[in-house]
Image (cartoon, rainbow, N blue to C red):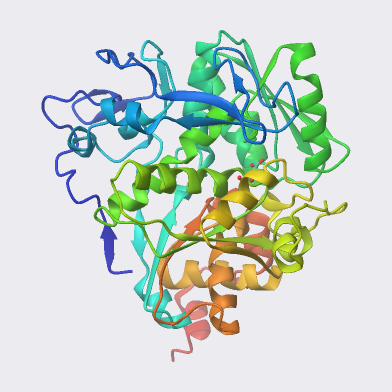
Length: 451
Ligand code: F0G
């Protein structure tokens, strides 16, 4: 990797005349509560609507699904109103981070922000990897460098801020691991109770350790992720739980900032193609929302084609594309080495299906062997240690190049979603065991073949 792409204009981290949302003294960041934005007098450009029937829902109450038709909700941005309060010049003076885009995030102007300084992750120009796999340009957006090691933190800073704004006391999620780690951290920061439901025996060790250390109540469910999510959703109202899975529209609003960042890092343009892993379908839908909004605001003048990548054993969305069906058929017993995306019944399937279609893209599958191979390549050639799900998008790029579904002269951005230290078991199981020697120079010499 030769270049680290930085935003073109953010030369000084703490620009004059524009208070950054982080609490900081000099260059030291204090995680925690940051004061309200203040100062904005225009009416908010946001509305929460059903993705199917368009019914408008009250944003000041916890809600995930339409009260009329049961479909998911989304936040819609009114372009004209957004343009009244969004200033590109002002935005560009702030450091790259989720809250750089605060005017485009639907949190009340009086709200206190809970932040661990998430976002602002590198877009790496992966030249060695590009040469190895035979593509003109390959960028990797490595979101494994977020505070808890995954992209979930982008959504959680917004989700927890919203939870507090709503006056909720307890937050909850079902998770294949990363959501629970992130939620637990932010709930701790905000002083809220946190309950996480995880599929028994299928959560990577690092993620489990995080949720426990951050003080969540960790509940192991005898079932898979889809069943755990079902329990959480059905219990939320009864037990006063604010659900922060990606069915929560505010989570998506934080995650969409990764798309804004990529455009900013590319110097104010959108990439041609974006490869992204798909599990529950929230992140791919969030990226599309970000790209589409940036284009509608005139910050960029195009959008990328989205290629969703699923593991072969957990690929209900990819099957929709290969069969031409507009209905998702759940996979009853999903399985893959990439446990983060071991999901058979994605709650966001409609959102992500539409997002990928609208972008002019498609979804396809990769095998576990493809994923592990891509994971090793990233680690060896670029120094990026991603967890298996975080290597799935690259596996998709490699598979598409081999099939001829992606041209060698393409420019691709590949999203890597989580850090490799999350799942040490998989990394160790596919690596050579350490060699053991006596503590002597001679022993080392024998090993190195020296005389
Ligand atoms: N990559 C990683 C590392 C993930 O943890 C997830 C999802 C995805 C990709 C897929 O994103 O679900 O928005 O399509 N992890 C969730 C969790 C399900 O519980 O941590 P998605």
